[in-house]
Amino acid sequence: MSAEAAPPDKTEAARRFLRVLPLCCALGMEVVEAGDGWVLTSLDYDPRFVGDPATGVLHGGVVTALLDTSGGASVLLHPAGSVSTATIDLRIDYLRPAEPGQRLFARAECYRMTRTVAFVRAHAWTRSPEDVVATMAGAFTVERPA
Amino acid sequence: MSVRNPEPVQVVKQRRDAALARMVEAVPYARFLGVTFERKGDELTCRLAYDEKLIGNPALPALHGGAIGSFLEIAAIMELAWAQVWDRMESGGPAAEAIERGEFPPLPKTIDFTVDYLRTGLPRDGYARARVNRMGRRYASVHVEAWQDNRARLFAQATGHFLMPNGAL
Image 1 (cartoon, each protein chain N blue to C red):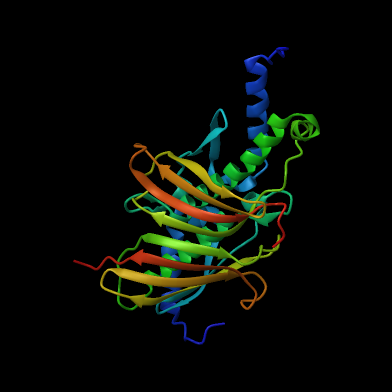
Image 2 (cartoon, rainbow over the protein chains, first blue to last red; image 1 turned 90 degrees about the vertical axis):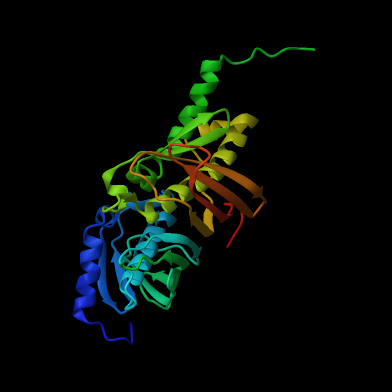
């Protein structure tokens, strides 16, 4: 999945970060693996999260929530060390619907961090990371320790 | 010139509110987040009722960006869906009867959605209003504005493009 080595402490740090966020708990988000400036997360299909009752497909907002969370986590996991972050903006492209009943995965990478802004890209998939459900490009704030 | 007896206002209101309620209640994720709609004529205001589960930064505390994005996307999709339901209801005939029976047109599908986070989402109710800037046969462009205490101080806005149900991807 990822070529980078995943130090267990980064994965544990990402899990600690998600555990205290009420929305992530309510949606059942989990950290699969994390490393320097990247994270792999997942979310189980749940009928309560359906956006279109006719098809049973998850609401786009659920995909947004997973991608945004992963994006924020990737910023906090970046070695440059932001102590806190907030989303400035994000754009999501929905390439295809996520099949009902399938677990959703997301991988976010903070690929550039300046003194004040972190740039993130992420994508979400169900069965195979090659068969992308949605992509995200986002900008996040960087808060350095005083 | 013949003047039709207009329906009593209460009957019209009740029919419209019932159609709106059915349309929104059919979407599980809107219920899960606590999103409801208020109607004045054909204009909708979307409300996100504050709940602890919407928090994404417990230290501040602040609403989660994912909750805000979800709220705005629900507002945009419902605005488009409502425009179609409204047209059918108002046109009368078989289309209006279908709505009456709870048979709604298929929901639009999101092509892309861009969210601009302008201010921290405070731990209280939020409101949103969506504007359809263009609705073609296949594609629609919608802008959404969201605020909390003060209508003039937006805390988020979004633009999205949607595939209308009669178009094929």
